[in-house]
View 1 (tube, rainbow, N blue to C red):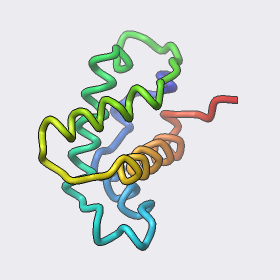
View 2 (view 1 turned 90 degrees about the vertical axis):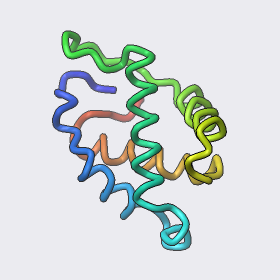
View 3 (view 1 turned 180 degrees about the vertical axis):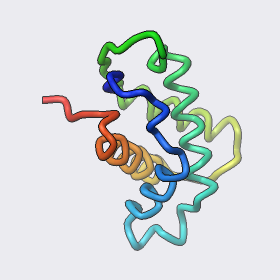
View 4 (view 1 turned 60 degrees about the vertical axis):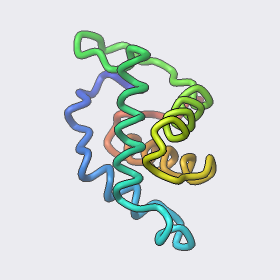
Length: 110
């Protein structure tokens, strides 16, 4: 996560729409706005739990995508709020990453 940019530029409504547009056509009837919103909430919880959101720091950090994915899957299984497969969660994560790149919050690791 590139912390040079204020997380306030991360507009949750725009992220939600971006991710819904990112979802492949064959899954558009399966992955709903409510499910994406739920996963976004878990992503923010993961960031906070791991200290990735810190207004006082402009340091860059690397996020372990496997840890984040595992955390999300565990929350889904525990909460039983949504019914998403690991692949569907990954599509949402990919969409969230692409949105973050589009606004400069994330950058590719080289």
